[in-house]
Length: 239
Image 1 (tube, rainbow, N blue to C red):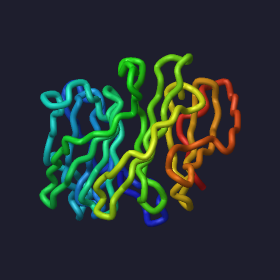
Image 2 (image 1 turned 135 degrees about the vertical axis):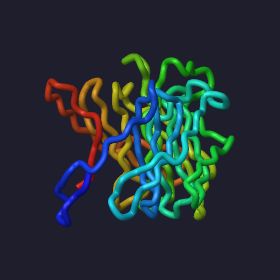
Image 3 (image 1 turned 30 degrees about the vertical axis):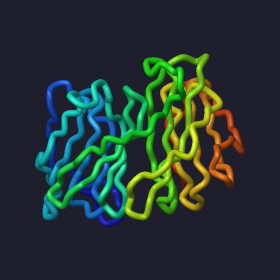
C-alpha cells in the first residue's frame, strides 16, 4: 500500500501470492528498503522480494525452503539489523533463533549456529516460539517463547549483537511469569537496551522486564492486569 506524506494510507498498489501452503507471519524490510524479507510459518521457508524504488511494487527474488536442513522450523518473525548484513528469525516449530547473511543481490544464507529457547529436558512440542526484536541501540536481540499449556511458563532471552550485526553469546534464558498464551511477545524499550515490555493473553496483562546488570538474567519490574474480557494482550507498542 502507498502512503501520503503525513503517513496516512493512500491506495493498494499491488497484491501478490506466495505459494500453496504458505502462511506468511512476519516481514522485515532491508535497511535500504531494496528488499522485503518474509517469514513463512506455514511453508517452513523464507522469501526475498525485490522492491521497485519507483512504484513500490515487489518481485519475487528468492524462496529459501528450510525443510531439508531445518524440518518443522516454521519461521514466525524476522528482523533486519540496521547495517543490513544480517537478518534474525525466530523459529516457532523448533523454538530457536536463527540468523542469515544477506547479499546486495537479495540472497539469504542461513548460518548453521542457532540459539535455543528451550532448557534441557524441555519437549519442543510443548512450546511455540514467538518473537525476536532488537534493543534500542541494537546491542541485544530479545527473544521469547510461549508454552502451549497454561501450567507451563514461557521463556525470555537476550542474545549479544556484535558491531557487525552477527549474533554472539546468549546471555540467559529465563522463565516468564506465565505461559504467555498466544502472546508472550517482547517489545523493547526505545530508550533503554535493558528494558522490554511483555504481553500475555492467557490471563491478560502487560509487564516490564529489565536485564540484570551482569546480564545473567532478567526480572519483572512492573505488572498491570488488563482484563477486558476479550483476550488482551497480544502486543505492546511504546509511545
